[in-house]
Image 1 (tube, rainbow, N blue to C red):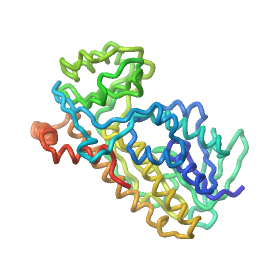
Image 2 (image 1 turned 180 degrees about the vertical axis):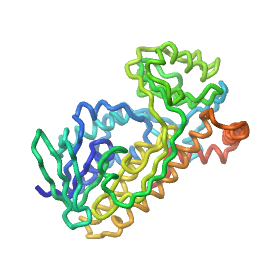
Image 3 (image 1 turned 180 degrees about the horizontal axis):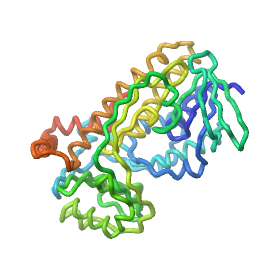
Image 4 (image 1 turned 60 degrees about the vertical axis):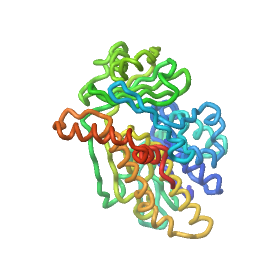
Length: 388
């Protein structure tokens, strides 16, 4: 079987790419290693840049997002209990973000692909990519014990950090920074602490108060990378969250039933280039950011924007220039988002291995940003998302 584009991975990147191509009449098949239930149950980020929101609108998969998503025009930054509001909408001339869980984005896109006749092959095992330098590359996989093969014009690897895509790409140079801490996150049935997210820097470590709706919260506290889930009872988590928010905001914390708890390591990672021959990387297959800057899903969306435009130009106008420049174009935005995520992480977290000078510099940096309109504007422009 031949198909114009084979997409490996059914996360938001692969699904969104498939639907953007579908709208232009370009067929694709998505191969996914996991089951549909597993994919739709993965807990991920929940802050969407307006560029990501606009892409969802462009493909007509925005009804539930518009109904349930929460528009935020700013964030709060708390330093040892003293909270400052950052009015991003005002500072950027009207730009905002939307709080809508990545899990929900994935569910919406899967349903849309299936409703429009799209083919998603779940539980496709042993996926391998072949002849990526030729005119007709192929993708082999095993489904229900049967060895199968798809030939195609192009392969889009949207298969995550551990996927086959980057492993197949020759000549990849990797850049990585691993942080000496993780985020302990909980999902709980409770009322949000505030109407917008609170990023808290405290001598004991970072904390974040977020939400999924007016009845479900997503909260995090910085923990040593060696900590285990069993080290953290629900009571210990709520107590630590209150401590890091400070005395006044501690009273705003609403406890509720915790129905998900996990510890995520933090890393910055970029692979260059993001293409070779007929193979293209997008999303976590090419880059990882610490979640402090809320950029993971949004970077995947911008990759897909550039890649879909390039493929559409090829099929509609026989132009190959956008395909040839895809990696350079995507990486220019990737590195800016990597810088912002590293910067936010550095300013807001405590580092056990830092010397006293480094600690004072981090504090001075944050104090400057919070006292300067220019500094707040820089933070806001990056947070709401740089233009494509």
